Amino acid sequence: MLDALRDLVLGSSCVGCGRAGRLLCTQCRDGLDPHPAPAWPSPRPPGLTDPWAATSYDGTVRAMILGHKEHRLLAMAGPLGELLASAAAAAVTDLLAGDADPAPLLLVPVPSRPSTVRERGHEPTTSLARVAALRLAALGHPARCVPLLRTRSGLADQSGLNAGARAVNLAGAFRAHPPSLRRLARRGHPVHVLVCDDVLTTGATAAEAQRALRAVGLPPLAAVAVAATRRRIPDSGIAVP
Image (tube, rainbow, N blue to C red; front, side, top):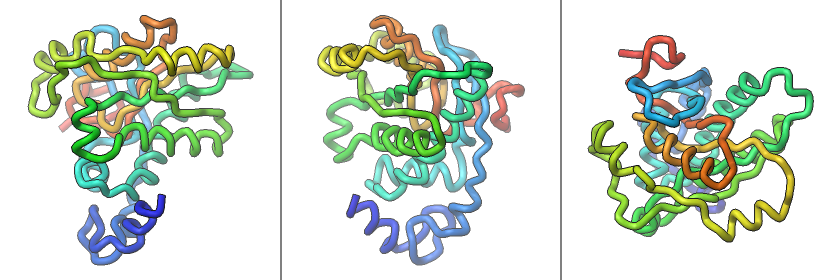
């Protein structure tokens, strides 16, 4: 927390505009202007259910995500987590319309490979999901983040893979962590599960995470992301170039 605050206040330049000072200047933060919407990839991977994103993966948001994920700009977790929360809130409002007493939300982050976590020194998506859970609770949606999923050995880095290669690489990639699952089961309360990620690209990662959760009796309500790439069908709500 102190590292993130120091980064935010003492950053040498804004990731969005390059202005000297904070890592994210007031003007760039105010200009994020999320528009949460369904973000269906085309083609749609089998098993993907209700993907939502807060905005498009470009400009300042892209710089924020890359800075947080690859360069340990930990202060970006706050504003990115808020964007993730906006996507989750929009999805819940749309998908649970008419539900007078909805169950609490369970945010399940998409896991990174252990080697990647060691290289980065942190787990970016889990950090964002934790911030989002706090933000959702403040908005009146009881929520908590539970890192239920783990990766299988042999999973390759997704960067640079096309849609087909991503689907092959991710087949059976995730599994539920038994101790975490047992702790969740002991609570004995119904929940609405949301798979969380920073970027929705082909949808293969979200679909695999949803599959792994269905396999243990936790069918996700939706997959939510901070941003979606522009590779989207025209009625997705996310701009297409």
